Length: 78
Image 1 (tube, rainbow, N blue to C red):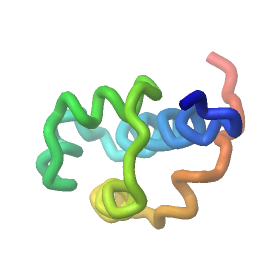
Image 2: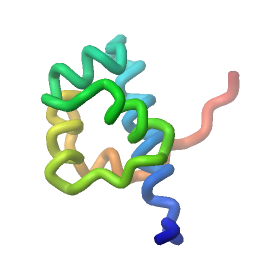
Image 3: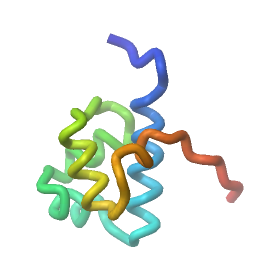
């Protein structure tokens, strides 16, 4: 099934940005969220459609809320 809403890409960008803002590696985030590093990589590349439970775990590890990971990020230059 194709993601017609683009929400998978929105989550991918939001997770990557939040992780980098905290200075975490994918492995660090995986450990904090209780997930595998390859899973984090798939989420950030938009190839994994995570469940709402995993979204909540990621949000907690990223010190944010799940709803913030569902909001399209503003593009920055550079």
